[in-house]
Length: 136
Image 1 (tube, rainbow, N blue to C red):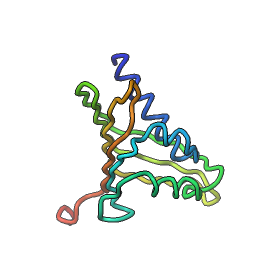
Image 2 (image 1 turned 120 degrees about the horizontal axis):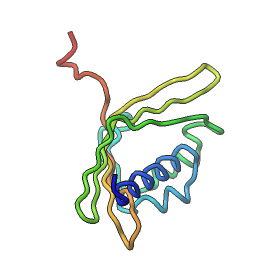
Image 3 (image 1 turned 90 degrees about the vertical axis):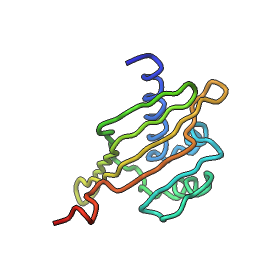
Image 4 (image 1 turned 135 degrees about the vertical axis):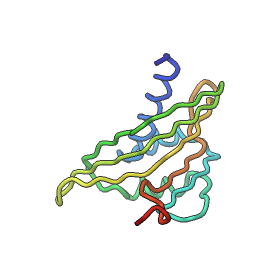
């Protein structure tokens, strides 16, 4: 792994942890104001901007003092100058009163380097299960 690849994966870890640890300042620093995203489990439409995520972070969507870990399964990085595309299957494991639960989805994030700093500018999430046409 090159230094630049390591830098991108370290940046992504900081960005993702900011979401689950309710760290709005880090989320703002690592996300472009021009963010666009598709989150199939929220709405079938594109969302633009940061306001929705700040609402979710500030209102503890993931719970207070959440004991969590995440894993990036089959991670891939495509680097094109100051633009990077990361894709993976995201697995979130959460420990709670009812035991440990897992949630999984496929995810792609587009990052751009602006003024020497990486920022997430686009996110696309899709389900990680068989398509209905593949069900038997």
